[in-house]
Amino acid sequence: MWYLYLDESGDLGFNFDRDKTSKYLTICVFATSQRETVQKVETAVHRTLKKINRRKGLLQELKGTKTDIDTKKFFCSRMSTTRFGIYSMTLNKQRVYEELRKNATRRERLYNFIAKKVLEKIPFEQATDSVQLVVDKCKGKRGMAEFNEYVQTHLEGRVAPKTPVNIHHRDSCQDTGLSAVDLFCWGIYRRYEKGDCEWYSVYQDKVLLDEQYL
Image (cartoon, rainbow, N blue to C red; front, side, top):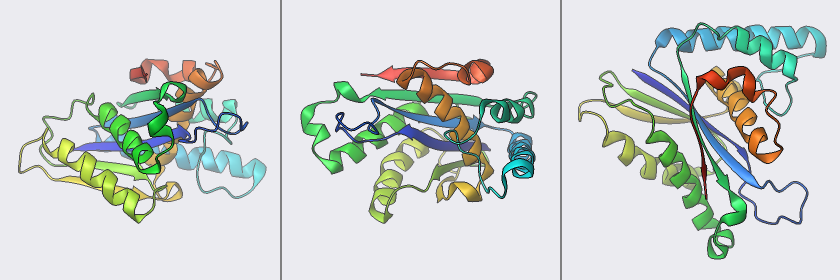
C-alpha cells in the first residue's frame, strides 16, 4: 500500500504589487509504502504538539509558517529512522502566461497539472493493496471534484486494474500526515521564495524530487 500526502505553500495570486502575493507556488507530496511510517508520523506529530503546548497552549496541528526551527528539528529527529520520500515541484509564477493569470478556472487547472507532474515521479506502480492520496482540504466542492477527476485517471493508469485508488480531502488538523507534508513543503518553498535553506537543509536527504516548473 502507498500513502501519499499532498499540500502546497505559496498562493495562486498574480497581483505582484501586493506584499502577500508569492512569487512561487510549491506543491509537495510526502510518500511512503510503509504503514509503520504512517504510525511514526502520527507519534512524531503528537509528541511535537505536546512539546509546543507545554509552552504556548493548545494547538491541533503543525504549520510550517508558525513553527519555529527548533521545534521543526525536534519533529524531524523523531522521523530520522522512518522510510519516506519527499517529492516537490515549484512553479515560478512570474513566468506564467498572462491569459492563465486572468482566468480562475485555468489557474485551478494549472494547480492540478503541477500536482500530477509531482505524482508522476513517485514509483508506486507495484502497489497491490491500494494507493491512498490525502489532500489538504482547501478547495471548494467543485474544485475537489475537478482535482479528483484529473488526478485519479492518472493514478489508476499506473497500477493494476484491481488495485484501488482513493483520494481523500481532509482538514489538516484531522490527519497527521498533512502536518508532516506542510512542514516539509514550507521548507522547500522558503528556499525558492526567500533563499532560506535553514529548515530545508535538515531533511534534504529525504527529498527525492525538487524541480522548478517554468
